[in-house]
Structures are given as C-alpha cells and as structure tokens.
Length: 283
Image (cartoon, rainbow, N blue to C red; front, side, top):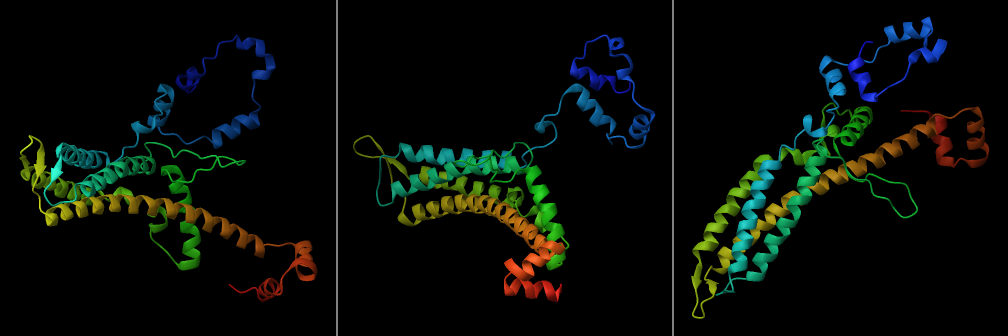
C-alpha cells in the first residue's frame, strides 16, 4: 500500500476481506486521486510517518537568547539593589520599581515573540456568554490576516510591499535594540556596584549620585517601554486588521445586492445616502 508508513499511525487492525465489495473504489474516484493528489514533499511524508509534527521542529524564537540576556542583566541589577539598605541621596525605591517593571515586561514580550515566531499558539479568551476569541496574533493568524490585508490594501491604497503581513510581527526585528539595552544595563550594574560601601551599622549603603541613579532609572524605563510598545503595537495592528477586514466584508455586501435586495433598499430600508451611492455605482 502506497504511503503505508503514514497509514501505520492509525493502528488499523482488521481482516479487510470482511469489507467485501465495500473496499473497492470506483474508477472515477481512482482517477480523481491520481489527477488531484495532495501535494506533499518527501520530507513532509516522512515527518507525518514519524509523528514529529511539533512546532519547535520547524520554528524558533529568534529573540529568545537576547531576551534571556536582558533578563539576566536586569535580574542581577535588581538583586544588587535588594542588598542595599540605604542610599545617601538617590531614590532607591524608584530604582527597584523600574527594574521590577522591566522584569515583568520581558516574559510578556518573550511569549508574544514566541507566538508570532510560530513556536507557540496564542491562547483564546472566552468572554462572558460568548465564544472563544483569539485576541492576539500568532504566526498562523498573523500571516492569514496579513495576506487578506495585503489584498485589500493593494486595492484601496496601492500598497505593494509586505507591511500588511509584517505589521503584527514588528517585535521579531528588535534583536539589535534589545542587545544594545542589555549592554547599557550591564554597565549600570557596574556603576551601582561601585557605589556600595559598608555603613557604620554594618549594612550596605550606596553613595550613588542622584544623577547616576536617574540615568539608571531612565535606562530601565526605556528598555521596558521599548518592549511594551512593540508588543502592544503588534497586538493592536492585528486587532485593527481584523476589524478592517470585517468592515471590508460589510462594505462588499452593501454593493453586491440582488434584485429583491435592491427593491427593499430603494423602497423601504435604504437611507438616501446609501441609495445615492448604489445609483452612482462609482469606484
């Protein structure tokens, strides 16, 4: 049997002679199978046979390492802050709060980039008394929505580039920016560590200047703001894309009307503006 290595995954076990004539396909069906085969490459058939259809065998999060490095550098800086009992002049609470905000944002950004990289799927949310809705993009939904947006926006705006496809994936292109922020925050650790001294009570204190502390706070806020801005942009682009495509379908239905619908619109239910638009029939 052709492709039996894939068929074996079904664990079929039965005496096929008991099927009798029910097992035979008509010649028309055989002809259809021969002329309209499912197009699969050899590697795809092998993967199907082996049952290795796991996302991580095909996709990776290109930002995983740089995000982990940023996480590590920020965590080291935060842990150092926790050892400091007092500051001579600086805002210690502001330093810790800014570091904690960044530490909270990194996992959210990491999950988002794993979704749009195809490593994981966006989870559906279930609104009260409603059906499950996927509010955030993953690779498959971003590509699907992006392709439909490209078709629409090429017609309406003359767009002939891949912006509609990549609009909800901008976070994937932030690797060098994240690395640059990691270098800065690593330097901030050195600055803060150099300011630590043992006070008269035996506790660790810091004589870091207000200017230096504010610079560290700004660096941490810049990094967390960058990650959240890109993540929220991608989410918003995807959500607005869904709304735009839904509106496009509504507009399309407004033009494609039959005779009965046209009668209802012109004589009963159509607004003057809508009737005028239909009668003008201009692009």
